[in-house]
Image (cartoon, rainbow, N blue to C red; front, side):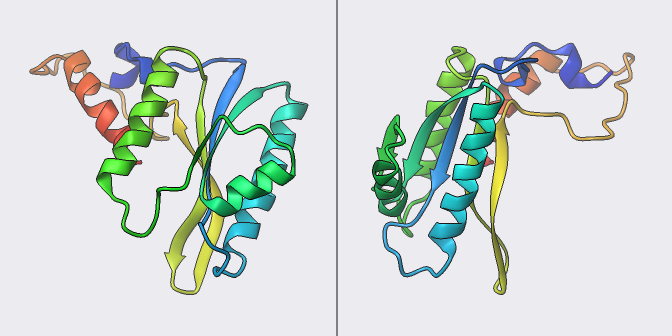
Length: 170
């Protein structure tokens, strides 16, 4: 089995039947971005409808004035809205979101975190995508851990210090 299967961490917790998911939607503060906002909002509506069909509740967190006004118009409850994120935002803001959702997940208020945003592939290709941040999933094709390997510090200490960093940089 993989190292992750031998270590207990709140960030590796997987619920067979998730009850509540946090959905973080990242839009712009202005509408000068072509299909940027509309693609994200269309994908979000579809994703929320799918969650409703599966009987999974969600907390909606929205970044950007365009998303906030869209969900207000659609009468979709938003748990928390953020307008202070812009082109100058950096690690401090990313760490705020990481800490917020790590706390929610480790205290079992949510069973997962999905981020809906535009992902840059190239200058000609930016697509709205849904990215699962929590729970952390081991990579496909993980190799077996050799029990004769001695980890120093322990595997628990290694993963417990690395997993929050993985979430903060995701």
